[in-house]
Structure formats: C-alpha cells, structure tokens
Image 1: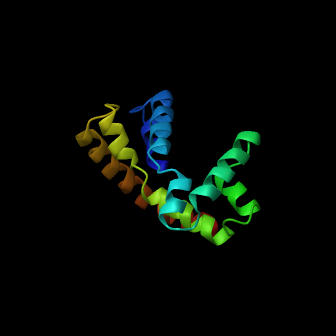
Image 2: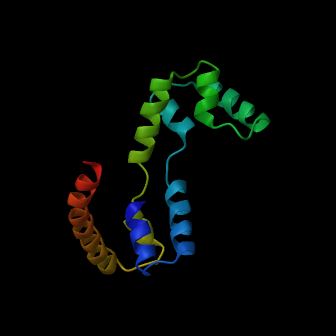
Image 3: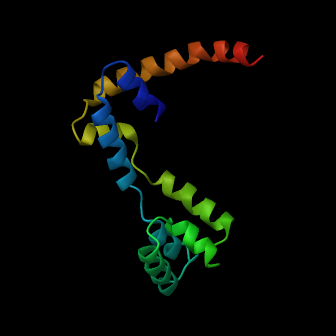
Amino acid sequence: MQFGMYLVDNGLLSTQAFYKALKLQMRSRPPLGTMAIQTRKLTVKQMFVILQEQCDTPNQMFGEIAVRLGYLTNDDLNLLLEEQSRHMAGLRDILVEHNFMPADVIDQQYAAYRRSTRQAEPELELANA
C-alpha cells in the first residue's frame, strides 16, 4: 500500500489507477469460506449457514458472522485472514498484469522507494525520541 501511494505521490500512477489496482488485488484473495473449509475449520453446511446469514445482514463480514455463530474462534479467524493475505497477488504483479506500468519501471521505482524509506528512518527515530 505504501509503495502504491509513493507511485501516486510521484505522478507515476493516477489515484484512479491505484484504486483500480487495489480492487483487483483484493479480488485476488481466495474466499475466506473456501479457505476455512480447506483447513477443516468449517463444514460446507456451516459455510452455507454463514452465507445465508450474510444475505440477511449484508453489512456483516463473513468472518464476523462465523465467530458470532460460534463456528470459528477469533484466533481461527485471524489465522485464516493472515493466510488469505499471503495468497493475495502482489501489487507489482497486478500493475504489470493489467498494464498499469511496465515491470522494469516498477522495479526501478521500488528501488528508489526503498532508498527513500531508508533515508527517512533516522528522521523517524529522532522524531520519536
């Protein structure tokens, strides 16, 4: 997320393109219910109960409903969310795959971003002292 904001701040990516890329990145995550079934944290029947409940209360997240119904613990949910994040496509891959930016430009800019964050770290340490 920080790198994407760096690209926007430096005029290399529009805010609109960054937003689209983030949406595509979020869609690349495997569904939480599928992961819960694969890891045997939920049964198929439980997943359908949760989905039915989610239809009735669309503002509630799948995981929140699963915990409220007692199908998952908070620890189970946190582990599933961490695993879900690990399986999400990286921003670089999204930007290249959907032709937002060429790979070589992203790589050059990422190196510049890393240099700039390393230079900013001592300043942060002084500010927090």
